[in-house]
Length: 60
Image: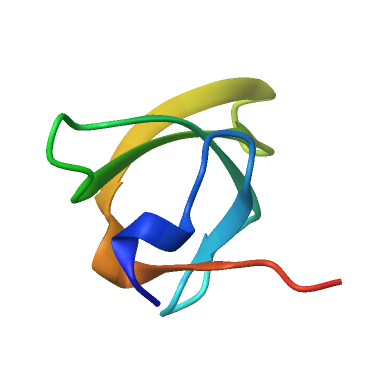
């Protein structure tokens, strides 16, 4: 998937497997997506960044 296909608010997951995450913003060059997800072990939201090349949109 191309980086330009993502937008803030998209629900994504890591291609290698992960919980569902919501994109909140991008780096200036759109190669890195900042995401938030619910950490069930810590019972709180966590924020992290991933290269857009390693994530995909959740299809319902």
